[in-house]
Amino acid sequence: DFLARVRDGVMAGDDKAADGLPELHATLAGMKTFCTAVAHQQVEAMRKSCGGQGFLRASGVGDLAQAAAEPVTAEGEHVILALQTARFLMKTARLVRQGGVPTGSVAYMREPALGAKELGPGGSQLGPEADPTGVRELALALLRDRARRFAEKLETSFAAESAKGASFDQALNKVMVLAFKAAECHTIYVLAKNNYEVVCDKVADAPVREALLRLYELFALQQIYENAGDFLGLLPDTDLLLSRVNRLLELIRPDAVALTDGFSISDWNLKSTLGRFDGNVYEAIYEEAKLSPLNQDAKMIGWSKFAEILDLAFLRQGMSEQRHGAVSVAAPVAAAAAAKL
Image (cartoon, rainbow, N blue to C red; front, side, top):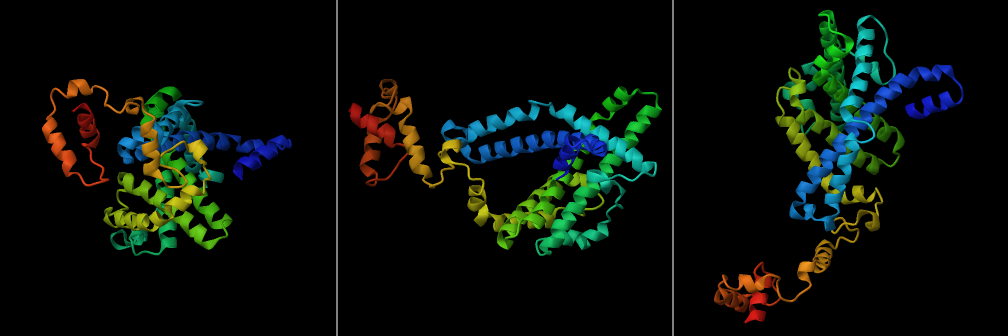
């Protein structure tokens, strides 16, 4: 809605709409940076989870991982774009420090600090037995509080370097690591906030809404769990948080196929033995294996050399003891030995 509102206002000649362009630029810069980075990380995690099949082009996963790597730095280098977001955050934090009122995506900078007591004893409000709605709102509050803290810390550090006589570029260079982190925290919060609000407001079907809210909750809690150091002083430990994540995974797993099918990605587009709509994974893998040049001859390539060092008597014995129709790792070698002998 924000993007459409600014675009329509500018196109209509509304000068006030242009006031939102700096925020729009900072928001889109952060989204491009961290959405592409997260997508690349998760696709690569998926590739690894598929084992050796994930590395084969027939699975389609290897090509996805390669395709996801390019957008991270193409059409806008991720560090430079993150610093554009960070500069906007510094200006906003300075505005708040001087008594100004931030609006839009950075209105949270005037929010009071979150206290450990709001998480309950031992962080129980994020535990596996806590109310789902409460967990989702608390997770969003934690991400919001983190974004505010890192933006304030960035502005304070930048001001300190400037006070020492550093130029703008020199001061920014000295706080660059913190600037990147602050931009990440802000972007993750905005993503989570928009996701939560859109699902709650726009999805009318209750079961579908709950399935999507579980995904939002998993994303938010993973961000907190995997960056627990950002919440020192708030989270007593992460044990209950991890228990909540594990419970969520159990609830999401039955919906995983339906959620994936919801993207309506055809077999033609996916080109994957593993992600076929009909679920015939092993049949597809076998058919793809038959197309390999190594499998075009009944006799194994290089057999003449292997036959000199293999124990052919042992292979013959193995063939005789195999159950009819059973598949064995040694079967291809044994078949080649039988053909040779």
